[in-house]
Image 1 (tube, rainbow, N blue to C red):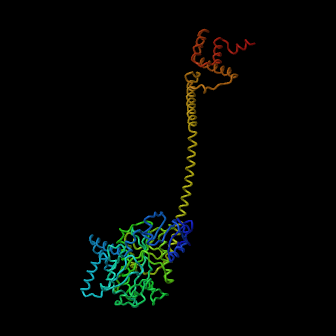
Image 2 (cartoon, rainbow, N blue to C red):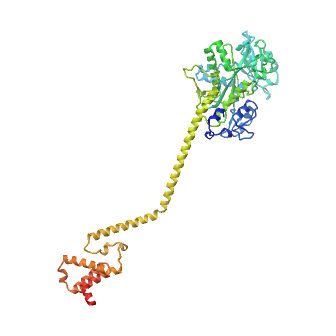
Image 3 (tube, helix red, strand yellow):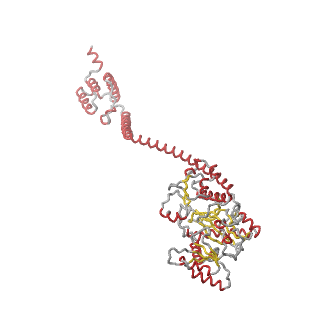
Length: 573
């Protein structure tokens, strides 16, 4: 991670800590240095999180390899649709025709940033007719440049202005279309009036990062550099590659090569120089056109490139300015050189790569909505992003690169956001834990209650029956206080209160005496009118209805027979 992110973000706040990340690469230049500065671990196995691979590895291995969800690689599967010279021109032409067919003529006219190009040998007859036409018009000094479609660093490039100068190449086996070994070339009309500074030709290397083609997401790096030749420009001397080719791989073999400066200018320095000479508005328009040129280039291949969430691509655009400050696209590099030739170049490329890794965000700390990350500015997300109307810039390309201040600012804001998110997650975890504990306790309580349910239910039924019987009995007794409860009113014999035997006689006497007194009060002459036999018969009939109560019946029998308690006492004496 960038040093500011490591400084401000605590270890426990990372979704994926940087010490756990692994990289794999075969390069031993600024790429390796940038990896090590982020404190990632190098691996030779397949357990890598990010791989910076060569183009050949993509072609040979990637189509047969299954990538894990956390793995990232630095090329799209068919990146060559944009980075191979012949396919790039082919896709531009096709996209332009489609726009014209759809009636978008104004947008189609914007695709005028690449020179007139033909593919050889397949389009050699067409090229030959164009060459003759220009010669017949008196333009005999028009120069053409030949480039092999699959090579870089200026290899195989030469310039000619006479058809006889390519006869030797034309007659070789490379021109035989039936030969599978034939090497394809493109031939382009040479831009004969390039913008010169100090009498020397230059072009610009500008970096563009693409993280997705669906939607098209592009980040433009503010800093690039201009590459100068080390010989004064001469349009007549077309055979001298040191005059016409700005590639560092070629210029560093020149006797005039400056090892201290490396033949490069910082892009900001170049922009300031052009402003002093051509004015701010003119230069601002030129750099804005360069930005739109890069966006349109990727829009032309957007539907062709295989989008993959595992892939990203850092493109190196080579752009040439002519004498009218019009930008021309020379080529797009899928693997721009990350080998430095000066200390300034070394720090520029290491900072560039560090910002690329920050945008890829293997640590999962960014939101994805940042408009600037380090030296990169978001210029397209589905559609091109325009700066505010009141902005003094039309593009940040070539502006001051404030990546250090910006990284420090974004690291602080990210640290605060991650700390808040971590605190919220901890609080939520505590709440979920307490809620789960309560639910567990309630569940255990319900299980205990359900196990006691039948017993509690039976006790409740018995209790309710007992209560109802007791209430009903008490009601009957209260309603019929002059008579003892009859057999029909008693539903549960267990509810009858049993008294000890020693008190039974006394209780029976009290009940008999109370009944006798009450009956005497109600019917004072009834018993006196009955004989002894009638009283005994009456007693026998009542005993069939009433409950069997021996002590009470004995007391009543004694009364009938005239054998009261007093007479019994006299007899005993």
